Structures are given as C-alpha cells and as structure tokens.
Length: 182
Image (tube, rainbow, N blue to C red):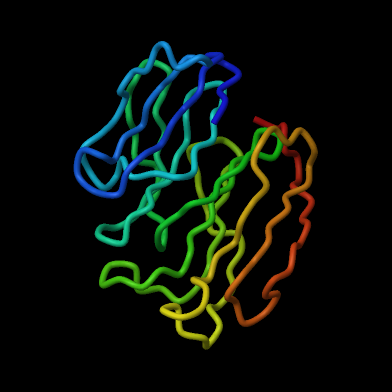
C-alpha cells in the first residue's frame, strides 16, 4: 500500500509467528524496515494510511480481531475490537472503513459480515451488517464485503458482498456524509 505522507510502501506478510510482519519499504525496495512482527495482531491484510498514522485491522482466526493505529512516531494503539478477521479497508475522504468477514473459528463465532467506520480515527462503530448465507464455508465462500483500494476523494463508499443472505454478489454505493469533516 502506498503512503503519500511518507512516500513509501507498506508491506503486510504472514500467517504465523514471526512471519506476521508490517514492513516499511522504499519504492525500489532498497530499504526495507521491520515495523511490527511476531504475533497474530501483526497479521494484517488491510491497511489505510492517513496523515496521523496507519490504520490496520487484524486478520486472525486464532484470537480476537481489532482495528489499530500506528502513529507516525511508531506508537501502536488498539482502537476497537471487531467481530472477525478483516482483509478489506478503505478511505472515503477522511473517513475510514474496515470490513469483518464470517470466517469459521472457535474465536470468530459471529455469522454476520460487518463494516466498521470512523470519521475521526478514534471512535468506531458498526455501520453495516449482512447475515452469512446458508451455504457451507468449507465448500463455498466465506461471507465478506470488499472495498476498492486506492485513493478515494469522493463521498461514495462502494462495497461488494459475497456469501450473504441478501445483496449477495452485489456492489452497493453509499453516500458518506461529510467525508472531509475531521
């Protein structure tokens, strides 16, 4: 993921132990710095750079999942717990969104796909929810909501759902009120 504020790339790797890493790299990868590693909370797929730091969500079936902020000085802060593993995040103006999928595990027991949002990066709320369809995840899809990545300066959030009872395989647009308000 490109970070326009530090003019660098962020690389997210791994599923277990020390392979779970968040790396900061130069464009040519001549410089690669280890920023976080070594536990399931550093297991991330979705990352959203913002002026005040990096927002990312954990993607683990082994522990509770959370949304975090890593500020520009390197301080890590847990912001909120989310219902399950998260592999999609995006920004609409200055609002931040992460989705949580329905992934089978002893820890992640919720059967709803959820979208969490924040207009200031600190206060988070669940704003959208879809129930997982009846088809077994072992043979069909996990329930999920995906977002388009990249810079979105509009006030529109687009989410595509899969494996849900309603709105399955649909892309829906929502107008985000005051996306540049904080």
